[in-house]
Structures are given as C-alpha cells and as structure tokens.
Amino acid sequence: MSPPTNQESSALRPASAGGSGDCGQHGHVAGARPPIVAMAAAFCSVVRRVEELGDLAQAHIQQLSEAAGEDDHFLIRASAALEKLKLLCGEEKECSNPSNLLELYTQAILDMTYFEENKLVDEDFPEDSSSQKVKELISFLSEPEILVKENNMHPKHCNLLGDELLECLSWRRGALLYMYCHSLTKRREWLLRKSSLLKKYLLDGISYLLQMLNYRCPIQLNEGVSFQDLDTAKLLSAGIFSDIHLLAMMYSGEMCYWGSKYCADQQPENHEVDTSVSGAGCTTHKEPLDFREVGEKILKKYVSVCEGPLKEQEWNTTNAKQILNFFHHRCN
Image (cartoon, one colour):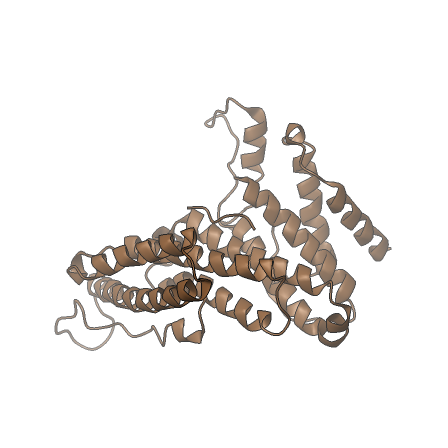
C-alpha cells in the first residue's frame, strides 16, 4: 500500500448532525438565523462533534495497540494528533478553529486506518471478516466529509479540509476497495455466489478514485502562465498533479476491467458518478457508470501520459494496453 501523505464501527457515525447547537445563539425571532450567528453555531457544533469523535478514535487506537502487542509508528502518530486535538478542544470553544481541529482528526484517521489496512493486506483479506472491516474503514475515512457536509459549514467544504486531504481521503477509500476487489477476483467460488456484491464494491471504488481525480481543475495553459518544463506543464494541464493521480487512473481502469469481465451478466444499476477523468473538478457531469466506456477512456489517457510527458520515467503500460485490447474485443 502507498503510505498516507502527511472507520471504526457505526458508533463513529455522527448522529443527526443537523442540530445547530446552542453556542453563539442569543435571543432572536423564529425563522432563518443571521448568517454570522448560524455560522458560529455550526462552528461550535463541529468542535463538539470532532472532540467526541476524537475520543472514540483514541479508544479504538488503544485497543489496536494492545492487540498488536507492540508500538506502531502510525498508531503513535495518530494518538499524538488526537492528544493535540483534545488539548485544543479544551480551550475556549469560540477560539477553536474548526479547520485546524478537522485537519488533526483527519490526519489521525488516515494514520489509524493505514495501520488496519496494512494488516488486512498482510492477511490477504480473510474471507470471514474482511467485508465488515472494510466497511468500518470506509466509514472512518468518510467521517471528515460527512461532518462538514451535515453541518453546512460551507458550500464548498474543501475550504475547510483542503484539496490535498480530500484527495487523500478519496484515494484511500478507492485504493482500499481496489485491493479488496483484487483479492476477491482470485476466489472463484465466491465470485460465482456473490458477483453482485463485487459489482457494488467496484462501483464504489471507481467512484472514489474518479472523485479523487476531479477535486482540482487542470492548469489552463495560456500566455499568463509560464513553465520552465514543458512536460510538467502538459501533466498539470491534464490534471495530473502527482504519482498518486496516475495510480488512481490505473486502479480505476483495472476495476472497470474486473466489472466488465466478472459482472457483465448483472442487471444495470442506477449508480451515477462523475465519469469525467480530466481532473476538471469545477464541473460536474454525473451519469450511470459503464465499465467499458469509463475504463477505456481513463486507460487511454493513462497510456498517453505515460508514453508522452512521462516517457523517461518508464511507467509500465503493458497491463493497461492488455485491458484496452480486452475492451476493444468486448465492444466488437
């Protein structure tokens, strides 16, 4: 697994976070609250909820550490972040910065779940327990976004979490489902009985990876933007900002291949995702996901980038080309 860049059970899901809380509210007539008062109430609600979630996560880390029987770097780092979070939450609530608190919580969750994901990979996703554990990890990694959205902090909640953390959360969920599905495709008896479940995992995983690729808009090349390296300019204009973006393209393309190969007989589902793969996060175009169509589009771009601007980096395109050949024959 790629290391994190910087989901416990359903108990960690925020209850109905739609409540506004009582901080910052002073008597006013019924109806819409003044924007400043409403924002202050939302801030206080987030601070309280992040503190609660941090306590639950810290308890979970303690259980993981005891079960492991030894100190782990990622668990230690996660615990340290949550201790700092606890200290900040203990200060005056009105002085707490929700963005800083949410970032600390998110970093802790990324480290904690990374430890658990590695354990799943090392054990090759045990058939009797992996499904529930994967759901728990996805739940953990979804908490920061859910918390912000349910408190209506800002129409574009990336302002609180930042593009990089949002990308990392989506990448980690998508990569986890990629690895889990990779393990499942090796189990023929399981596939015969539960191909519909595989399809669900694939659709969710592809959705997370495409989401990750679309948070940031490509850099528009024009006379006002200067680059010393033309290849770098081409990558940024294609919405490729890191190696992880390339991996996300290959992973999603391969998951489309598995979907087309193992789930072709499944009834179509109305599972809509943003199927654009240009990194154009400023536009939204959701449509039912077609495994072949999306996989072909994204892998063609992957090959083009690897054999173009990244030619000297020797990225492997063999598997991508074999999958594209599969799609071509399947289409014909």
